[in-house]
Amino acid sequence: DEQELLAQFESTIGHHDRIEPRDWMPDGYRRTVVRQVAQHAHSEIIGMQPEGNWITRAPSLRRKATLLAKVQDEAGHGLYLYSACETLGVSRNELTEMLINGKQKYSSIFNYPTLSYADVGVIGWLVDGAAICNQVPLCRTSYGPYGRAMIRVCKEESFHQRQGYELLATMMRGTDEQRAMVQESVDRFWWPALMMFGPPDDDSPNTAQSMAWGIKRNTNDDLRQRMVDMTVPQANALGVTLPDPDLRWNEEREAHDFGQPDWDEFKDVISGNGPCNAQRIEHRRRAWEDGAWVREAATAFAARSAGVADQ
Ligand code: ACO
Image 1 (cartoon, rainbow, N blue to C red):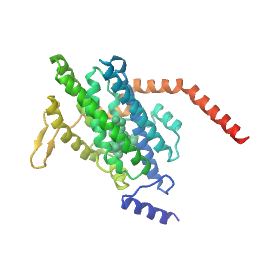
Image 2: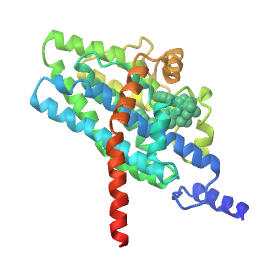
Image 3: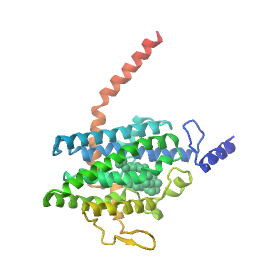
Image 4: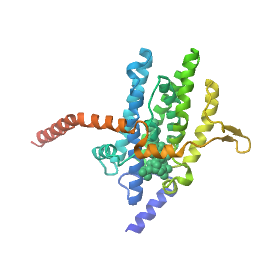
C-alpha cells in the first residue's frame, strides 16, 4: 500500500540510491524533477542562440569549427535531458509547448545579448564554468536518468569551458583592443553568471525540499561560493578584473567574500522582461512552427511502417 511504497522511496533516498522511472514516487517529487529537468533542457536549447549568433562571424575556420561543435553539443544536451524528462510521462512536444507559452522557464543567462566576439570566450569560461559547478554535483542527483545524462553533459561542458578560456587567453596575448574587448565582456557577464545559481538560499522556495529528496545536492549559495573561489585564480591568470569592489579573500573562512548580484534585475529576467527574452522565445517558436512538416512526415512514415510490419 501507499505507506509501504513511501517508506521504500524514502529508504532509497536515504541510502543515496537512485529512483528509476518505474519506481513509485510521490507526485511532488515527480513534478519537481520534471520542472527542473525541463528547465535544464530548455536552457540548453535556448542557449544555442546567443553563441549561434557568432558562427557566421568567427574570425577563423578553426574558431568557427570549434564554435559549431560546441553549439551542436548544446543541442545534444537538450535532447538527452528531454529524453530523461519523458521517462516521467511528459512528452517532448508538451515540454516545447510549455517553453513557447512561457509556462516553463529556462536559465536567465541566455536572455543577455552577445555583443562582441569576446562574448563567445566569456560564455565558455564563465557560463559553462557556472554550469559545471552546478552540474557536477547533479551527477549524483536522486533521479537515475537525470544523473546519468549529467555525466556526459559535464564531460562536454568541461571541453566548452576550456575552449572559452583558451580563446580568452589568446585574445589577452593580442592587442590592447582585444584585451579591452575581453574586459568589457567580463564586466557584462560576471553578475549574470552568478545569477545562474538562482536566488539566495533564504529566498529560494524549492531548495529545502529538493535537497531533502536528493534532487539538488547543494544549495544555490554554496555553489555560487564555489564558482567565485574557482574563478578568481583563473581571472588572475588571464589578467582580467572581476567587476566586484567587495571581492576579497577571507582568511578565516578560507573563501572569498563577494558582493550580491542585482536581484531585482534577476526577477525581471526570469519573469520574461530581460533584454532578449522576447527575441529568444520568438526564434524558438518560429523554428518549432517551421519544423511542423518534418514532425508530421515522420509520424506518417512511422504509422505507415507500423502498418507494413503488421501485414
Ligand atoms: N534562471 C531562470 N530561473 C531560475 C534561475 C535562473 N538562473 N534560478 C532560479 N530560477 C527559478 C526557479 O526555477 C524557480 O522557479 P519555478 O518555481 O517557477 O520553477 C524560482 O526561480 C526559485 O528558485 P529556486 O527555488 O532556487 O529553484 P530551484 O531549486 O529549481 O533552483 C536551479 C534553481 C539552481 C537553477 C536548479 O533548478 C538547477 O540546479 N537546475 C539545473 C541546472 C540548470 O538548469 N542549468 C541550466 C543552465 S546551464 C546551461 O545550460 C549551460
